[in-house]
Length: 66
Image 1 (tube, helix red, strand yellow):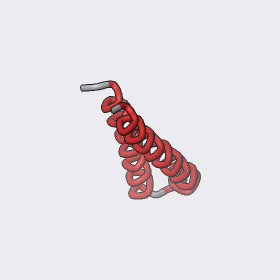
Image 2 (spheres, one colour):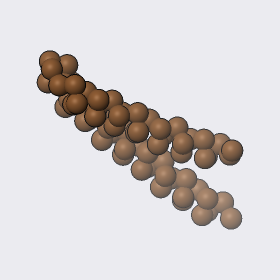
Image 3 (cartoon, one colour):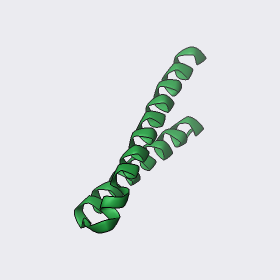
Image 4 (cartoon, one colour):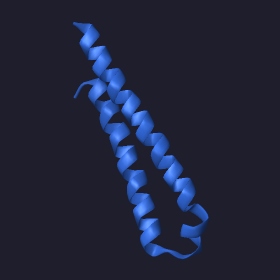
């Protein structure tokens, strides 16, 4: 596995992990959900944006490497 593929997999796994964390938190409910649901959603949005920037950067890099 190349280094750029490893970075991509790590970024996507981080997004999936945060999404899973949010789903589990919402399904349990309670005070933890009320207290932290917005923060978890913000984490997810930030990590999705970072993953998208990484994907676009890798596409640009591969296109210009030739």
